[in-house]
Image 1: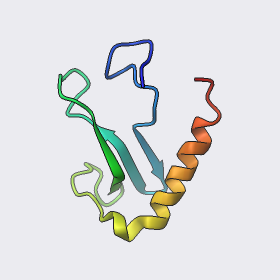
Image 2: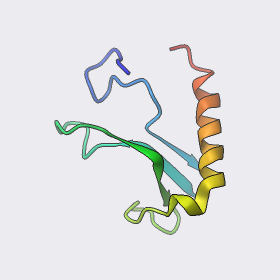
Image 3: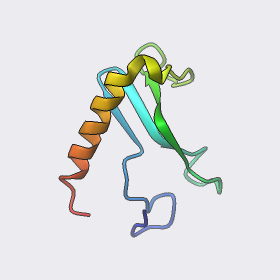
Image 4: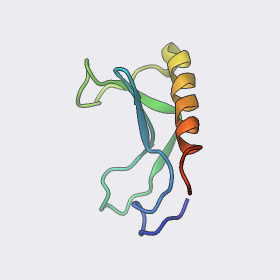
Length: 84
């Protein structure tokens, strides 16, 4: 979880990923400079960035199980290409 910079910049992980119009947030925080703690979301917060560009209305994860599964597969594939 640590990295070369102080938190929240030092975390070596994927905070969000987008597949088509669906964006999944795995970690959220009010702002980079705020002292609040990151929140891990499992299942991830999902948003339709076309219908809801402000990401104000999370989608129901149970309606997007296949999408979540595919996003998680792609994130793991991506992480496997990185020299941590």
